[in-house]
Amino acid sequence: MRIAIGSDHAGTELKSAIADEVKKMGHQVRDFGPEESAQGSVDYPDYAGAVAGAVAKKDADLGILICGTGIGMSIAANKINGIRAAVVWDEFTARMAKQHNNVNVLCLGSRTTPINRAIELLKIWLETQFEGGRHQARLDKIQKLEHS
Ligand code: RB5
Image: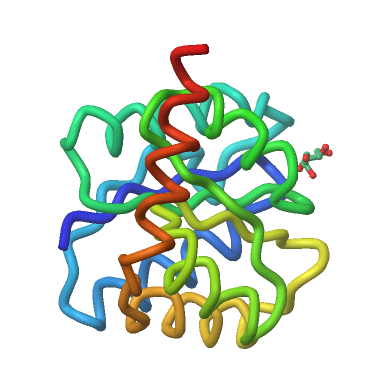
């Protein structure tokens, strides 16, 4: 798969670790930045827009966004039509995010989730299949909200 990834200044270290892991799993990674060596703070909506925009335009199959909590990234990414972004923090939320919600942009908090745990959650999310059925009907209703 083609996976777009981005973070803010709080998430660059976790972003590098996640990007390495995604590549090891055999996927293509497009890193929207910022670089781990970059100085100073950046604004998470800029990176959320770039990554979620790539997913919405189908330039990427899935996206991963990291900030201190994952919250700002998820709020920003969900402003883009077609994006289902969610913060996950344990095995259950990582699995449900795909199984029930078909989350296409995974959000992680670098200040809440240690690197090894984040990698476990990433793997669960990538490996879990969307269940469809009644959950697709609910996602269709969410999509209608985009135009309301
Ligand atoms: C940056 O300090 C912090 O606000 C950001 O990383 C994120 O946690 C926002 O939701």
